[in-house]
Each structure stands twice: as structure tokens, then as C-alpha cells.
Length: 229
Ligand code: CA
Image (cartoon, rainbow, N blue to C red; front, top):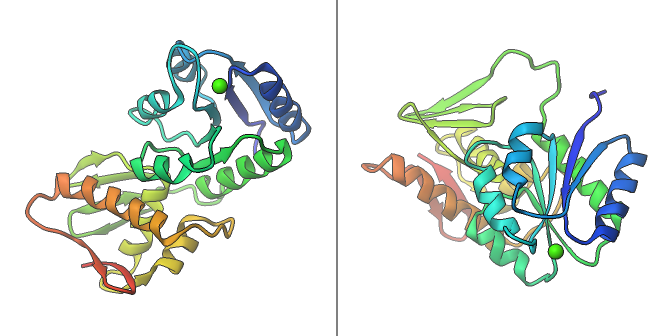
């Protein structure tokens, strides 16, 4: 098994932070709490947590800003807490780079299950020690570091975008349905709307297009899904 994993909880409501910490302790996680957004980035850089639970509304610096800033330097999994269920699709569409979203009020048990699911899908088993890479044309994926290079230049992808691209690069020229892509990026078997897959694909295409100005590699196939070619 893994050594103790360190979860940073950034949440200004002490009761919520406390109950999350209690449930995480039961499951063997180590936790740290922060009730303010101001120094979040400093703390994350200093303590290098394995997972971050991040509330959207925080004093001094909000969760979205923190999430965007973290993604400049780290792929640490982030689970975002929001107070409105209708906000989740919108946030996903904006591509801030969170790995999962949970709406308040929630059951702490559910949140801990999500934390474990995200960790399972973002961590590769320890047996795959050598760096595995996969490439297609000018795209190179470093599977362990979750790093994407286009024309040798790093392109910052969210974990979901990375897994979508991984699935497509694995089968160049083959059209993958949205269902298939959904299973590739959510190993916990979660069902999301096709719209959610489409918005992740849109973000992915925009990011790749910025580095591949001459050529569009990702194609949507009307009524079916997507392919890389
Ligand atoms: Ca709050």
C-alpha cells in the first residue's frame, strides 16, 4: 500500500473542515487545514500535499483562483467544494483544472470515497517504474508525470484532458465514442453528460491548437465521438 497520504483541506467553515478531517483520519490519511485562501499557494508549495480539498468561496482568495494558480506548477489532484449544484457544469466547462466537484451539503463519507477514487485514477501502480511515453506526430505524453509535450514544449492539461488525449493517441485514426472516452477518464465508472465530455474536448483542442497552429489533429465525428488523425 501507499505510505500515508497528506490531504490539505482549504475550507473556511470549521465544522465542515473538521468532519472531513475526521473521516479522512479514519481512512488513514494525514490532514492539514487552512481556513483562508491568502497563503494557500505558499502552503501548497511548501508542504506538497498529495491531495487538495478546496472550497470555492474563501476569504481573501477564492478557490478558482487558487486552482488556476496551482495548475501553473502542479498536477496535485484537487476536489472542489461548491455550494450550488448548477455551478458544477459551468465550472467544468471553464476548465479550471479541478479533478472533481462536490456540492454542499455533502456526506463526508461520499467526499472521502471521491478522494480515494481520484487518487486511484491519478496514481499509477508502483510496478510501472520506468517512464512510459506515448507519442503521435508532434504530441508526446509522459504517462507517469502526466505531462504533455507538443513540439517539445510542455502544454498544461488537466488530468481529465490528459486522459482523454491518452485514449485518443492510443488509437490514432479510430473514432472513440463519448461513452468510451467517459470510461477512459473516469475509472470510478461515473456517468457524466456528453456535454461535459464535449467541453473537456473543446478545452483540450484549444490548448493543442495553441501549440499546433498549422494543423488540427483532434476531430469530432458528428453523432459518434472523437478521433485524432
Ligand atoms: Ca466557504
